[in-house]
Length: 158
Image (cartoon, rainbow, N blue to C red; front, side, top):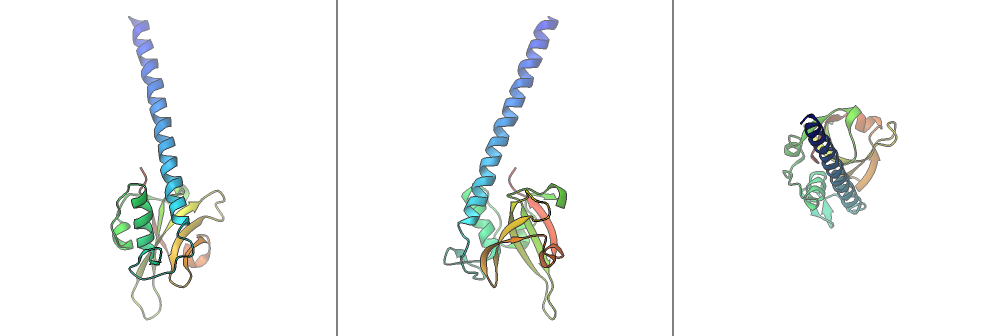
């Protein structure tokens, strides 16, 4: 009887490990697909409220890329920033969304977002976003302009 319980325990343990590995592979595929989709937009001009390859804004880019992998986000960066699980600097990974809150002199605060694409080098974390002046580009998060205005990170790929 004790041997049967032990054998059942081992079978369950190996099943859980296999399930966990399969889930991790699935998650990695979704992350790669989302990052790859975002990179296909590089060079697309910035258009406020845009949702296409003719012109797109930051939240439109996030909306389209995550929709492509089966994740429905709200349309605006501010609303998107409430979706998913909050993460800190030390736990971000590709596929996470970074949110910025900028305040320019004489203007009201505005939200901006981008997708983390590479965390291999912690001193050069890459993210892709729709820049108002350069269109869709990949930038380095560690630059003071971006780093100083990070509001939060969210993980939407579970």
